[in-house]
Amino acid sequence: MSPPLSLPEDEVHVWYLGTDRDFPPATLVRWEASLDAEERARWQRFAFPEARRQFLISHGFLREVLSSYRDIPPGAWVFKGDRTGKPQVSQPAEARWLSFNLTHTNGLAACVLTRERAVGVDAEDIRRRGGTPSELLVRNTLAPAELAEWEALPDHLRTPAFYDFWTLKEAYLKARGVGLSLPLQEIAFSIRSEPPTVAFGPGIADSPDSWLLRRIAIPDWHRLAIAVRTWPGVKLAVHFCPWPATHT
Image (cartoon, rainbow, N blue to C red; front, side):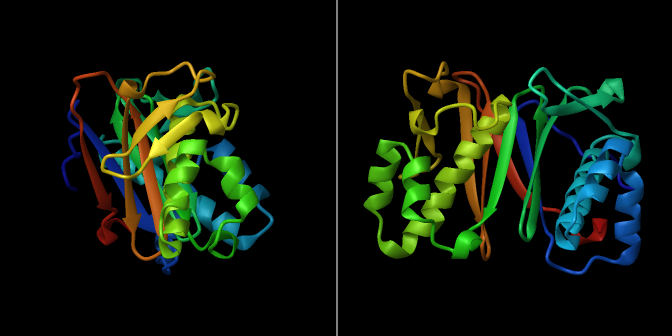
């Protein structure tokens, strides 16, 4: 057995797993066995086989990722919602420093881990809704500054750019644990340069300096973004890594 992975205080680890491939039956059985009672009930409520499969893979994957950092069986992790309902580690108590967030979409699961920081991750398949977002969706989602940046792009770059904005917004909202309760028009990201930046309108009580933002494209069809709560002057190293096939 490999020794547990290290997660230094100044690092953020992002793991992702392609879910379209065929997994060995033994892997799926192992992941199913690792689910807790609440996860199992949610998994069984899905009416469509593909939704059930995505849930099982993503949650089994998350538990195995967490166990790679602590010598703990995947099924032994106990999660509890914080005051906003966002899952966090409850047991083992000695691993409560481990902050995480999970996302999954068609063909991809991803999780982000760091130490005792608010963190969010989102991923999207840019082929959703036929690939091209509707004008109504774009105008309901993007802040005026984002819309101007988006409209300045060539047509062939607009769809992936829209999902860059979308995943950044979702990652930020997930990090804060507020869902879609904040006005999207007052959260304005810029992707003109790297890393992305954010500006907040008067309806958002937050500071742009409090967030580390990153985005990546995962071939061939996915966009992924993270948001991590930080402090001015603090430097964090972010590592994006595919989950090794040897673990599945």
